[in-house]
Length: 500
Image (cartoon, rainbow, N blue to C red; front, side):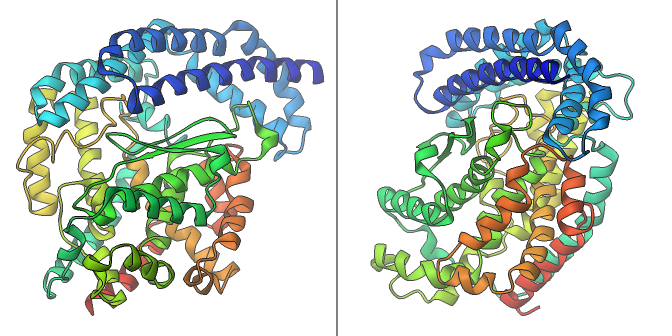
């Protein structure tokens, strides 16, 4: 059995290596590749995805897994080896349902769609992106059919990002959240608006970049195992545990957009940099799920990065960089400004009170696209209609509306719900952190993050993908994913800011 386990690990390591090579090409496409390279890059990535799928679904892999399942039953249930075998079984069963040709075609189509989206977004021209998105949706529906029968056509798409979760479960959580968040936004709307005009003066892009670098260095981002670059849409990618890269985008007239994007992506990167080296080059060297991943990015971005304790430490440093713009702005005024609640067009720049409404909108649209009840050609109109219903505003153009996110060009239909689920998990974890580290806010106010990061390393990061997401959240917080801590967090924070 030990020999068979070692053979399985060897075969899986080869798959992981090829996936890392593909990730390098994808990262390069979104950062430095010239636009004319898109067609050949799509072919290169399609070739790699074909090889990855063939290796991952080879009969030898399946036979090794079947031979090892009885052995796994004899091992401690939480051992790396047992979890590895069970995780390999689940992945193999999923991947063998999908034809290799479909995998390769999907990779080629989404690579070209990425470049089309970049151009369409720059020009605010949905018509340029539409044929690419139509093909992406067609391929996602074909992928879902590989798993029929299902409870809902969206289930297989969601499962790729949140293993084991069903569409009905997400809808139930969102249905519980929606009235509370809508009511909170309505209450805030009755209060005097917060002044935030000073955030939108002209700010040096280099100084913004340097400040963001200083902040995430303080958080614990390991620059020997990563780097930061610019991209049209911020993202994090990993080529291994020793090479975890982030990107951001800086706006000269929006001080906090790039900073909070940098914090957000740093949260993802800290998670991956903290995975136990014992899981290296295995299927377990990943996050438990995207909701757990997003809990880390949203925690560092919001529960830390938008908190008053953090800015007690960081604001004097920011004022010193921008004395003309911020010299006469108090800490309290700055704190309220970065937490201002106002319906806005761009998801990644939305405040915490309205953010989940952006996600609910996207979930409804994705479900409709998967079901076939919404055609891609009607997406801009449907988007604008739901923006009116949820947030009371209508985007003036497609760049600020339907074209703002990179996810659909990458074929990541099923991903969006994990952002809202990540918000919930982050608040659950934070309540547990405050019990275990009662002085955590005092530490943050001193610019000290080592204990917080060490807690996350022990409870979350080191385990990688060993545990199912609900299982992990239950182990750490004592309950599965639930909205109550997040609602308590929002009520307390915005009650204080707006005097509710």
